[in-house]
Length: 200
Image (cartoon, rainbow, N blue to C red; front, side, top):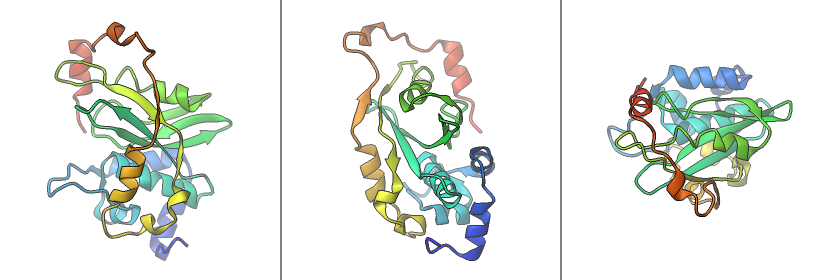
């Protein structure tokens, strides 16, 4: 199935809920890319036991797909001086939630309590800021991106998945700050900045 080994498939089939998937992502190291930038496939994430946000989202999407759900990703687009964040989307009883890999105390897992993707995306707005000065950087969010459009080679590819990453990061976005309201966005306080800088 999807060119996965028997052991890989059995492992993924044990990740039967978003909480179990999140617990697995929380248990592995954050990929700080000490030897250069990467965009590892789920197979490489499992093998190496580490991931950054898009790598974790790809793994989470695969686990959802193996267990009968759609492999959906959401890109949170930010200013050029910050980094986009990618999460895997899931739905329970009609409500959206998100699975997230991050080394910080913010931008994390979301419970399935959001009526729309917009509601879920906006839950990240307040905590998406630069630690240095507190400026909020989130510009918008993509539509749900179904990984099935990219076939299945991304699941086990040994090379970095730069083509898929570029398509995800370049996906059209819905802007979140109403026109004219940019000047009313309050920077995060010093306390918020200190709290957000706690790393796992």
